Amino acid sequence: MTRKEFTAKYGQILLPLVTPYDENEEINYGRYAELIEYLIANDLCDSFIVTGTTGEASLLTFDERVKLMETAVKTVAGRKPVIAGTGCASTKETIALTKKAVECGIDLCMVVAPFYNKPTQEGIYNHYKAVAESTTANILLYNIPIFVGVNIEAETVSRLAKFDNIIGIKDEAGINPTQITDYFIATEKIDPNFVIFNGDDIMLLPTIVQGAMGVVSGGAHIFGHEIRTIIKAFEAGDHEKAKDLFVPLYKFCKSCGQNGRILPNSIMRPAIELVTGIKVGPARKPLAPITEEEKKVLIDTLTSIGVKVKA
Image 1 (tube, rainbow, N blue to C red):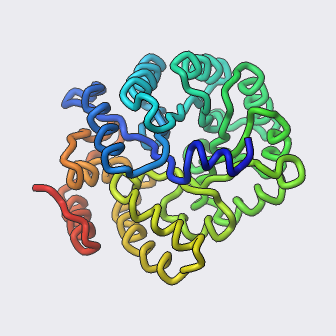
Image 2 (cartoon, rainbow, N blue to C red):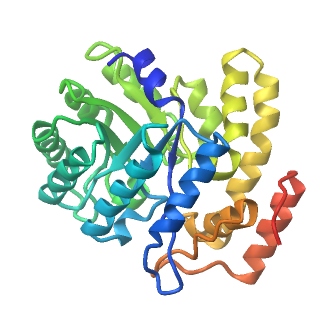
């Protein structure tokens, strides 16, 4: 698959869906479908990602992840591509979940590096090799060292790029702002069509400058139109417009990281509720819910950047 073919199929804004919960922290699949319909109706993204970090994959059971895939595929009904987050701590479970994704009709899986156990680079390579060889699906590597505990080094990516169905990587660029360039250099001779996406909203501009093809954006639940305009403005050479449009998104991202919150879900969720009116519920424990002080800052931020909030 060429880069042009990838963007023609999946686009430049890949949205990792939040997972709605009820008051008992059980998944509300009906609300999940409602959210998907809202996002499609408002054209806020090009593709959906099911059970990614924004969807709190690490807090979901295997069966819950499969049911979310099934729900997304059924609801979307071919109107946009659905990508499955299938990475798990173990290689065995990752392979099993990737196979389930294929059974659901999904042909691209985003596979986070195996977390908690901190494998070596050779361990990471062997993990992805086993997954790639076990499936017909295309694989998008997912590097997010702040949560996984290990970084997928450029040399490892260059080795993995030799597999026909490992077609790219999503990099959480805030940890290493120039690593996307390292990935381009490492893969350009092995696979000049290797796909490289940024996975951090706050790094949108710095990464498209380096050549990132798009963004995996939780913020697109709210700012999908603005993100699209930023990317198009930059591509058209209107860098001043891109910068000016980026500032509100930057302010929102900063508000989601209040009080040292590394994972923005606890503040992102109420933001989605305030803007869309769709009740997605608080994050699952152990993620702490938003405080009243944090909510005030969030509302003030949204209002200051011109976003209408619902009562």
